[in-house]
Length: 445
Image 1: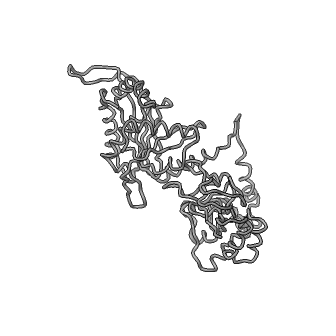
Image 2: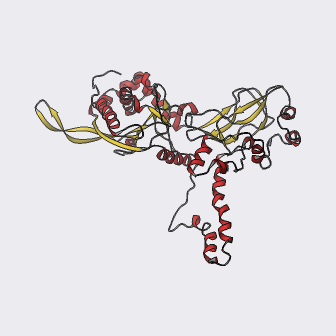
Image 3: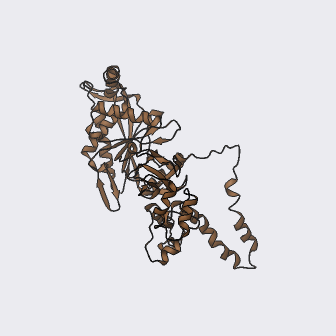
C-alpha cells in the first residue's frame, strides 16, 4: 500500500502559481491514471490537472479558490486497493501529533486544519529555514518588507508556508496594526483628527458620483490587469514605428485565397504572412528573441511565436506557434487557424500558451491603424500591425516620381530598453517592413 503525491504541475516559464477553480473528485473517489482531478487557472489559460496514478483520492490539501505555488503537493492518492480510511495509517507517521490520525479518519476532506496548523513559530524555534515562493519574495521586495518582518507573517499554506493570500491579508492589516499607538499616545491632543483618521477608510471605497454601473472584473480580467502592470514595472518600454507598402502582399492573397482554401482546406489570412516576415527578421536579429534573467541575457535558439487572440468575452490570450521558423506558409496558416479556433472555443491546452519567445498582435483587426503594445513577459519585444488602408503615396518609377494608390500599413515594436537600444529596435522593425514590401507577387504557396 503506497501513497502518491499529486503536485501542482509546471505550467509555463513565467507562471509561479495557479488558482484551484474546482475539485472534480472528492476524497474516497476512485481515480484512473490521467483522469482529471481538478480544474485550475493561471494568467495564461484554464486547464485540468490529471492524476499521475490510479487509485483512491485519499486527501486534498487545498480548497477551491486557493492560490497554490507551482510544485506544491495539492492531493494524495492511495494507489493500493482499499478504502480511504485505510490511508490513515500511511499518513499517521508523517503527522507526529496524536490528533492527526483520528482527524483524517473522521473527515478525510480536511487533512490539515489550517487555522490550528499554521505553526510559523514552531518552524522558527526548530531553527530550520522557512520556504518562500518567488512570488512571495517579489511582493515582499515591492512592499519594503524585510526578511525579519517576513519571518513573523503567519502562513496558511502547506507546512505553514506563506502564500500570496497571506501576504495580501498582512498588507491590509499592516497599516491598521501601526495605528493604535499613534492614536492612544496623545490622550488629550487633537482627538477630533484622530477620530477622522480612523473613520475615513470606510466610506471612500463606496462613494461613486453620477449615474454609474458597477461591474465586477472576472478572474481573467484581473489576471490580465496584473500581468500588464507587472510588465510595465519589469521592463523599460520603448515603442518605435514604421510604415510599409504591402500592396504586393494584398494583391497576392486576393489572387490565391480561393485556390489555397480548395487545395489546403484552410483559409489564408494576413496573419501567417506577417509571422513569416517576423520570423525571417528574428533570424537576422536574434537579440529580439531573448529574455532577461537578472544581469544575464538569454538568447532563445527556437523561435516560438505568440499571437495575441481575442476571446468571445473580450479578453485576450496568446497561444504560441512552436518552432515557427521550421514551418512553411501552409504550416503557419494551419497553426494560426487551429490555435485561433481553439482559443475562441475554450479548447486551448496549457502547453498551447507556453514557451513564447516573441509576440505579434494584430490591432488592425479592430480598425486601429497603430498601437503601443505591452511586452508579454518574459519576452523582450512585441510587434503590432495596424489596419491596411489605401492611400495616395509618392512612388519611384523608371519615368520618375509619381503618385499612386497603394495599400499602406503602420507597424510598431515595443521593446525592452534594458537590453535593446533604439538602433537595434528600429533596425529590426525596418527589416520586417522591408520583408513585407519585397513580397513576391508571383510566389507559390
